[in-house]
Amino acid sequence: MKSETQTWLDYAEENLQSSKILLDRNLYNPSLQNAQQSVEKSLKSILIENGINLKRTHDILELKYLLQRNNILVDISDDECDLLNTIYLPSKYPMDDATGDIEPNDELCRISIDIAERVFVSAIDLTK
Image (cartoon, rainbow, N blue to C red; front, side):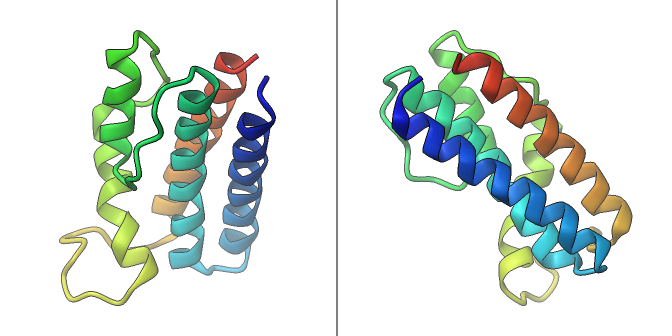
């Protein structure tokens, strides 16, 4: 594994752990932000390990499709990508109605953390 890949995975793991700690404190927005960041960094670690040009984007679906175009499949659905994309900006900045019907709460955080854990494990497997 490339050292740069390991660094991205280390950061992804820190974001994942932070998301869990923040959820335990009922800090939903930062928990969601860290779950999203864990997924983003996990996907980017796979790109780096495979020598694919790193795309400067926060769009999870775009990163997934970039991997797919290079015959790399990651365990995340399009709907899960859309969910993480929907919560990205509102979890960082106050925005009026940016999330539509999505309300940051315990359940949404747990769903996001489950996705982040699954993608992180996929990234570890795909970068060995």
